[in-house]
Structures are given as structure tokens and as C-alpha cells.
Image (tube, rainbow, N blue to C red; front, side, top):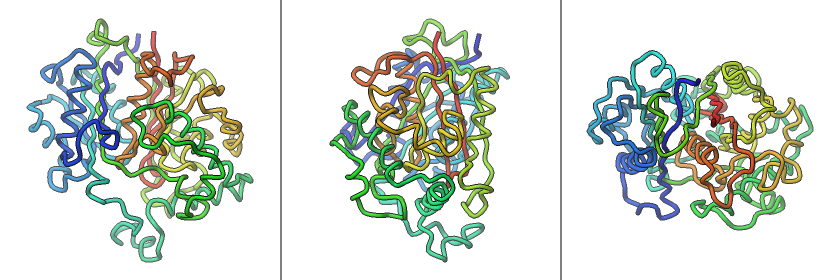
Length: 386
């Protein structure tokens, strides 16, 4: 039997009016945590492990996030983890929570994230400060992070013949899922021509190839197996996990068409004793359309160079053969700085069969993959139900 499972989730997506604007990142996390614990049938007094990545909008406490949130919530954990490797941090936290539970260091882990990125207007294409590795990118005008992803897309197009239309299809498939999600930020109809007609941000990525900028947050509760049984949801078992990173800035990436999810995915599937072809659906970080294409190839869902065909003809959209990003993703649902926690939330809800109109028909096994930085880090989680 697996050692741990996701037992509760909660989200706060400010664009949809779940809470009014003006909340702080700490308040957002508190709301999400309360919802996740209630979803599991637990209270904050059950939590003995606290996992928090950086908090957008909290410049001081944001550098010591577990201390800030622990004090704010009145949680005094016996195990804490503030790992921040970008948008994949929360998938990494699931793996770290599993390891801590196996080691007897905690039994109920709370993973949270909160961001006021849109309200703070903190997302800029101007590039990060020109220090350390960034001194070789920012002064030369590379827009961050989209410029790095555009370089990867251009290389993939050169190497495999991928077209802008192929990337646009990913955005269209994802929007069709968002149209079934009342909480999604963008729910209007979308076509490939619409994507290609949207403003060019960094060739070949158009505006609608890029994720949203929103406020919001989420929380996930992971519990040891003996605590997971008998709660409000059947356990979403953690079957496999892997993480990897091989660079910080795109200039250090060994191969821009080969993200570290190749390694994280291989490790996760090996731990689970499963193959990519056994998965029923996938939740994949979609900071940009090229991120998703590269990731399905990296995870073995499609061979290298054949990612475009994987998404063709609505294959990953509602009614398609292999559902991907079933809540609308970072492209159409929400993207408050770091999106990875929402992948886990949606995966768990799909496994529990509580997604209503967007519920996938086959929901026994799922692969979740987070990406951080400029294709810098990856963490992969394999989830399954009894």
C-alpha cells in the first residue's frame, strides 16, 4: 500500500470573485488552507508538517515563508520545508512530504501558496536584475521569462518542423476545458486563428500562447496512509515522485528542447512501477504553450518531435482521447505567479470524481508535472485512486 495520499484541497482564485481584491498573500493562504483542511475533514491542529514556497506580495516574510505562515495560522509544525524552485515547488513539496512521512517526521502535511501578483503589478517583461547569471541576459534585452521559452519554441520548430499553429492548438484545447469551469478567468470561445491574431510577445509566442497574470492561491493536504483512510475523500495515493533541475537561466540549459522533466518523469514512473501509457489524464504546467508541448515529450506521453500531433484535432480537449489541463490551466483558468499547486488541486478533484461537467471519464491514474524558472526545474507526481 502507498505511504501517503492527498486528502484535501482548496483554492482561492481572485479573478472569479472567490474573495475580494485587497487580500494579502497571507490571507489568501489562510483561506485556501481552511478550505483544504475542511475538504479533508481535518483541522489546523492536525497539521504537523508545513510546506510553503515564496509568497508574491510579501517582500519581508516572503523570504521565510514557513515562519510567517506558521505564526499567522497558529501552526507549530515539527517539520517544515520552504523549498522554492519556481512553479514546480508544490509538486516537489508533495515528494518531500512523502519522504518526511516515510521517515516519521510528520503525519499531516499542509502545502500552501498565495500571491497578489496582479494587484501588485509585479510581472514585468523587463528582465530580472542583471546580477549573477542574469548579467548575460537582461542587459541584452531578453524579455523574462517569455524570451527564454520563445527560444525553446524556435529551436523546436527548427528541429522538428513544429508550427505556430501547433502551439495555438494547445491554447484552444485548454480553453475548451475552461469553458466547462465556472471558476476559470477566460471562458470565451477561442480558435487557432484567434491565437495567431493576438499580439506577438516574443516570436513565435503570441499573447494567447502565454499564461494569465492573476492573484490567487491554493492549498493541498497530504496525510500518512493510516490517517488518509476514513476521511471525506478516498485517498489520492502518491504512487511516484521525481524532481530534477539542470540550470537557472536559459543560457545554461544543455538542450532547450529537453527540459528536466525528462529526468523527473523517468524517476516518478520508475518509483510508481508504471508507464506513461497507463495514465488516464495529465495536469501539466502551462506557463506557455511550448511548455506543455515540451513536457508531453519529456514525460514519454509523445515521442520527441511528435508533441504537436499529440494535441492535434482536439485530442487533449473535452471528448478527446487524452485529457490535459482539465480546469483550463494557466492559459485560461488562473496563473498567480507560480501555478503548480493548482495542478495538484485539479488532479485530486478529478480522481475524486467531483468535477461536474468537466469530469474525465477515466480517472484512475494521473501524471502531474510542474515546471519552474525558465524550463529550469521539474517535479513529477504520479497519483492514483483505489
